[in-house]
Amino acid sequence: MQELNVAEAAQPTPAPESGFEPAIVAFVCNWCTYTAADLAGTARMTQTPNVRLIRMMCTGMVDPKYVIKALLDGADAVLISGCHPGDCHYINGNYKARRRVKLLGEILPRFGIDSRRLKLTWVGASEGNEFAATVNRFAAEIKELGPIDTRRLRLL
Image (cartoon, rainbow, N blue to C red; front, side, top):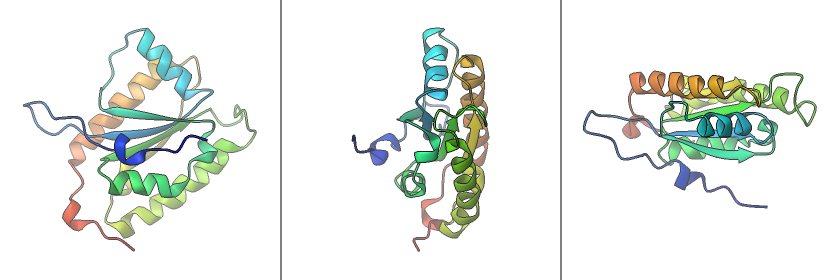
């Protein structure tokens, strides 16, 4: 099994002269969202370049420690995106992801991280346009929040 290099993925893209550009780590489902991302790319849909994809077999396999590690290692936000509920190749993986994201949303403020920096979405394999719109919208939301204030981060 390939080890995830979350720290490498969390490194921000050098910001253009215009200012802050958020670094976003996206844990995506192999079967749906990754395919949609590939479709968006091959169709040359406009999307923000500062999203780093980490392909998972299922969003239900995203360990919360990787989400927290990404944020502590420099990512400004984390996106988790998988199959629509009921379409999971592993039956209930997206339901597991939903429960974990809900709990993570409650835990992140304890680290000094705004819970809006974590987002869960459902994007089907044929929804390349939805993937592009989702990452663009999320990047805009995070850009509005600004970078994580590392002076306020707390380790438990």
